[in-house]
Length: 348
Picture 1 (cartoon, one colour):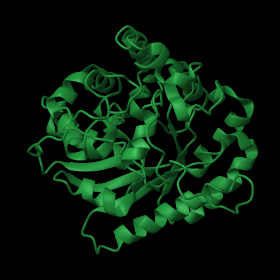
Picture 2 (cartoon, one colour):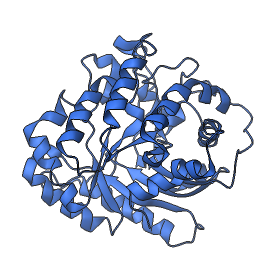
Picture 3 (cartoon, one colour):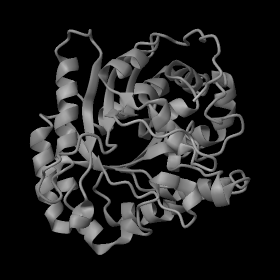
Picture 4 (tube, helix red, strand yellow):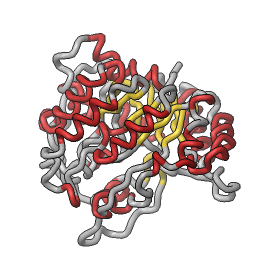
């Protein structure tokens, strides 16, 4: 797809240490040409059919002081001939290999995939334990937890090709039996869900107060499909649910994912390249409210690359985050940009 390019911005606070706690790697066949009425999320894969270590290194090395990253599942390189439920172990094996390449030091001090968040089908119930234990072995000490995507909405236009998760997943008896295996193994849970689903996570966090939970993308506010033109109207609902969620002390939040199509922010259309100041102005209500509710020590900025490339490039994204923390103390910035991620994902 064609993008409107702009001159690169000067890097703000280039010495500020960053641990990027959310990115993906993949090598996917290119989609056919865009079709009229196709979902915007399909453009993400068209833009980046390949995103592996070289592409990640180029982004991380674009000027900001990114010292390490955490990989988050995206269904990449599953085992083709695995026993039922074991296919996701292949993703952990693949990413651990990438991490080992980076840890060799031949590319410099940057440590890609220092933490790995994989996937296990928690609907296996008690059977999820065997998958988790296999992923721990495959991760070489880097496997930190799983993400079982539960984003769902009754309007298929909201998620488009991502519409494959049944509603109410977090409350299913089998899911909770699988979820109960995480904490005893020292593993965390990343939740990608949509803003109207936040009450489901509130209930889950109350039911499992000893499990570390990370909410991705500030809960993914919506402004497309059935929610077109209603994002601002629903802001208060989002804020109230986030306030309730913050009462569970083991819940942390990733600040990002707002350059995806789902929130429907004006000026973000997959082609325009807004400035970091424009992005900061768009995202400020969600970012500042989340930090206020959870505190800097439970929040972490994330790139969500290459998915957020739909809205901006890597360097501009981190400039936007830095603009959003101009008034923060050095200690707060240290938590938001590296400290919280290092603690939550138990990075060396």
